[in-house]
Length: 359
Image (cartoon, rainbow, N blue to C red):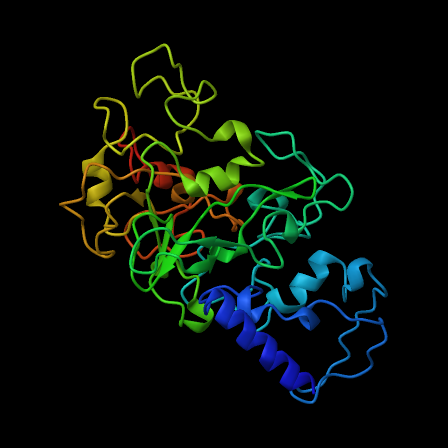
């Protein structure tokens, strides 16, 4: 009976919102029993999934959850072969080609110290902002909506089709979902969306850096940056924002903080960024492109356009890595994997800036 019911619900969702690709816990892949148990009494697994108790030693939890939120998420997302591994390295199942968002830390154990990215259960106030989870500490559900959240396409051949937000990313401030950010397309790029994912059928390499790139639908803002800004408020903005630059000074210059929007590589000459420097790298960190062109990794990009814009993902991995602040130490000489191949932050700066040695 359960299988019949779940099949019927799946077909209903399919007819209602279309077949989602690329994100779990959304649309037809939103299965209540993945996370909830009705009576906190289950003693066995379902016949179809190989068994298991499905009730953790932590006992009963609010909202009929099988465990508290972080521990529940990590039952699938830590050292398992069937779901993306998002916590440190922990022995295995890190995708072969890396994780575009990197890895969270939790236990302040080398090489994933608290200073290398987002720390689960941390009560600290977010740098550059005022938010903290004073009760439970940082939880997965502060940045991801566990039941999925969607947007409706308004352009392209799929106009009117409903899609989930990328990676179900949605910051929750005091329990209230913020506006939708980070829309995306799969397989065929749509320039009005923030993210282009080349394929949804890559198994453990689904979120590999070489499978994900970033559009720039609005030249004055970054969808990725707007998402991060919900907690790290002061660190994000464009040349029109007083927290980012001296707005009374020369246009596009006199920055207080590194821009996350509205500042193209090489737009200002002199002691600023250099497009020729960026072009010369064989392997380049991610930047936003309004035209959906990112060159070919592994070869110098001599024809790179003048409208490429760095943002948060150019320098940091969202979850973190083994480098301070989740920075991407990239020499530009080998493929950029999690944390990249370099040994210091100057190599990252050297992707776009030419002042002084980088090694």
